[in-house]
Image 1 (cartoon, rainbow, N blue to C red):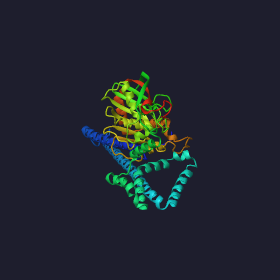
Image 2: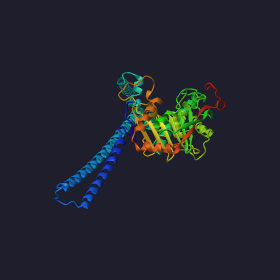
Image 3: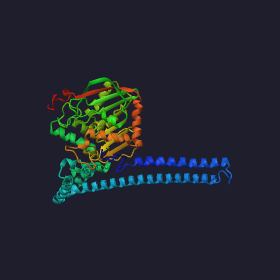
Image 4: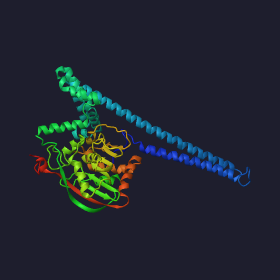
Length: 470
């Protein structure tokens, strides 16, 4: 299994293990010093005379042993300090690299719209050279290029810098045609008031409006949903870690249940599948492109409403704690469920979801598992939340190995299940804390599992049962 696991905001080198070992060495230092002091006190209590025919070197031996113990304690202390400093150095380097990439992306997004206005030829040439270079670096394989760490990083930074591109385009438009001031003034006013010209959520909302206008309301349209029980009452054991949590996420097979619910004495676990239908024209599948865009826009989606309905049908009562787990769009839905006031979501675990910039209530712990060569979570940008409740887990799946054929292979659920196995072996305290929340719900007992099939209500949107036509 390729790719080292890293845990933490902006981390490219795993420092959690270093800090754990540093803590162990510090504890060893304390224990060793304590033993040295106890030995010295014991020697004083014995009152060993010097010299003594039977034990002429006893005092020297005890003294040498005490000195050795002190040396060991001092070595443990030095190693602990060095590990802490090394971890801090890696964290500082990661932060510096992230800031450099962010500012470079901002510079490029500022220059690109202005260049297109005043020097379109050189600007397009530079963009073409950059694209050709990335394509050549990937062996002229488009799938490999899209799965490259460099391309995914470019997408992250581009998403983060979208506001700057909008503002630069507005300024360049005014410079080229002063009469256009009336059209772009609202963008400038918004930027002056909020410091942003349009974040990812605003862009997604704009996409909804444009798609609806272009298709007469058929595309990316949200509708009511309903759920139907596919199986109920099956006994299940409590998941033993992240690998078993990921294993229980429904896969993407069409026609199979999209939601799995488990009830335990201490609360509930809910598992959400990823996107099933990528067609922008809304049909009866609620795990679709319309839900994806709605969640990115920060609006209610059919996917999350289906999950909430499945919990209600399974017997959920307000105030009972929930841990939500999902893959891809299901990961976004897991985080979005925390915003439902009738649901007491205490933790959400996203495998490959674009959740880094999603809002979440205070106190809700979010584990965001992201592959560095997966384009999908990069669509949330490089958002770096500073609160301890957001735990990014990163890994490069195809580090040093051939990339399989097909679009975005690092996004496959099977790849995230492999990463979940590495998470179970990680010494990271933050990952252990979230598993403790899961254990608090499941305890040592068994639960009752049910699966649910969700669909949009055709009559509510004027949709045909087969596809989203009017």
